[in-house]
Amino acid sequence: MAEGIVAEGIEASFGVRLLSARPLGGGCIGEVYRAELSDGSVVVAKVDRAGESHLEREAYMLRYLREESDLPVPEVYHYSKELLLMQFVEGESSFSSEVERHAAELLAGLHGITADAYGHERDTLIGNLNQPNPPTESWTEFFREHRLLYMAKLAHEAGRLPSGDLERVERLAERLDGLIEEPERPSLIHGDVWSGNVLAKNGRIAAFLDPAIYYADPEMELAFISLFDSFGDTFLKRYEELRGIRPGFFETRRDLYNLYPLLVHVYFFDGGYLGSVRDTLSRFGF
Image 1 (cartoon, helix red, strand yellow):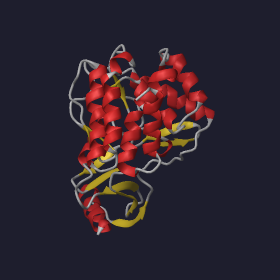
Image 2 (spheres, helix red, strand yellow):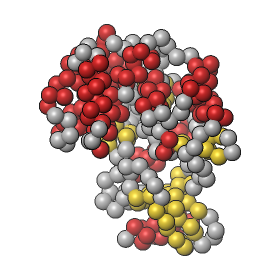
Image 3 (tube, rainbow, N blue to C red):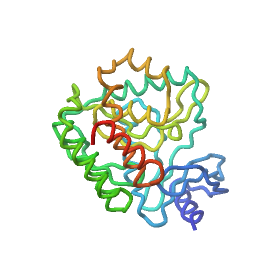
């Protein structure tokens, strides 16, 4: 039982008893609980009884962000193959203009952290899927091979992206050199900023959850935020004041970059996301 796994982990980590574990809404990684402890404290517990959600990688990403950036993320207390214990953060996924401005300032700061290559020092996760990050000097090559083609082939192998659509993605990938450009430098991104992964309280961002980090063109972050309208014009205006947005993003690169999260969603959810992939491919003539 999940509660037994949580109780054992809490006793081993904190030396106190578990009083209750109530389910929380979560993403693709494990079962998520709000755990109340006998000393009055509260933690979040993620449980993966099958051991297939790579909780260790989620712990790594959260700790990397806490150590390398000023982005507010939950503190990790304990992790194993089956259990992740972390800080419980109060907040809601409802964002005022004040919150959007704060989000822009935080993400602009995150994107100011750079590296010598695209990718990361190790593979990370998007949901519970492996996200390959071999260090690559060319952004176009990285996006083509390790995001666009990788995810299209994964969705195809899972039976969710038909062969004809895979071939269309492959044809577009061959033409990327003429559609996107090399950014100034690789920037650290959160990688999965949608409203369900952001908590706000008292007009400020309280935490970003469930990261999918790597070093990328920072426009990947902006594109994904716009895909699900996570933040609006107030966010974009403040971000542009701080970092600028290169010409061509809204006209071209935003839709191209969003093919990656759309393919991720085709893999997980199928449904209407395949239509969105097809619409994007058609828009670019593929």
